[in-house]
Amino acid sequence: MLQLADAHCHLDAHHFPDGPDGVIERGRAAGVIGYVVVGLARVDAAAGGDPIDPARFAVDLARRIPERVTACVGLHPHDAADYSEPLHASLRELARAPEVAAVGEIGLDYHYDHSPREQQRAVFAALIGLAREVRKPIVVHTRSAPDDTLDILEREGAREVGGIIHCFSEDRRFAARALDLGFDLSFSGIVTFKNAQAVQDVAGWAPLDRILVETDSPYLAPVPFRGKKCEPALVLYTARHMAELRAIAPEVLAEATLRNTERRFGKLFAP
Image (cartoon, rainbow, N blue to C red; front, side, top):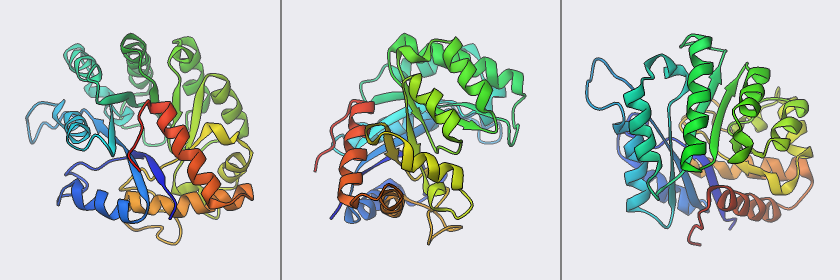
């Protein structure tokens, strides 16, 4: 059985009402031994409560299952309009926890534009600064904003901490500059989609020691599960497809991406 790490998954109750334990058990049965769980701060005016609580969930899970889970904390660009100095301070405090391996996901999303672009750019820059302050890598979300994403990463000194481009969906030109800035490339189920030729090109071209695999659960299930709810167990299908694109054995791809995930996030997962 392959041993794999899911480099980016959302397991909170909003997505998995029955809790994360069953999801992790199913993943483990499929060979997934490591989980980078993303916790995103979110202001919910209807529900009330502390906006940092959704991010804290990921940290608590990593604390409870340290042999399998490490956490990231951030603010999605969709929610950049909710950014405030008190929220920044709360994220800074949480990001210092030893269970937190990275700051993210953070970045730009010009596809949906749920927050004004100017505000997205300002918050992205501020949170890169937070990552540099706590000296942890960055998990970047970028959609329909390639040039602004790369320019802000460079301008704000993100090279100092590096990180990953999560759910990679750009082309080789973007990939080359991201790699030069110290960012690894993490591939989701998108790489299995028939119309994702540019992503597949990068997946076959990028250095083996600079690629990761992820699910972005509960989104973007790989073929043959496209359109269904995704969970970490399905990262196996993404890894197999990546191995085909690179004309290497799945075992080689799995070993490399597992080690790359452990290196990037500074976490060794139990076999």
